Image (cartoon, one colour):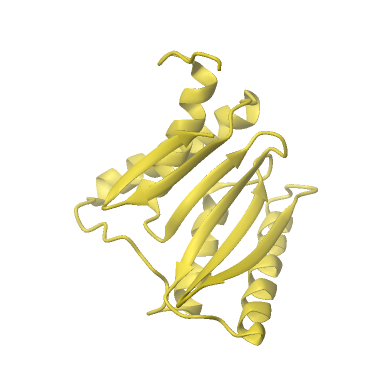
Length: 172
């Protein structure tokens, strides 16, 4: 097993990116980075089971919104997918995106769409202690870390999760 040091810049950028996204966006339950496909998966939890029609409608909305957002920003070719899985009374909605074209603005758009469509169903970690200034700092960190991860491809699979109000990141 390889040894990692705290000053390993590639791991640090990836870890900081996942932490910043989870801290800034309490609607995201888990986030994972796959270096093999150079992609990020954002997992959102809904407190009810979606019907097939509801899933197709939100999938269509999310994918068309991503396409429109990227067309307006002249991002070029991109990869995006939306998947659904259900466990007992919880639905997990997973949005997969390539890192090369992903932006903070797009993440904000996805969350706004999910809030609008699933007001009371979207599971959100309470983030009341965050001040507006802290949120702006997190947004700036996300922009910087996204750029660093795009430039310096990390070889480490990372996963970030929420647990009891904390954010944890693991090297898979």
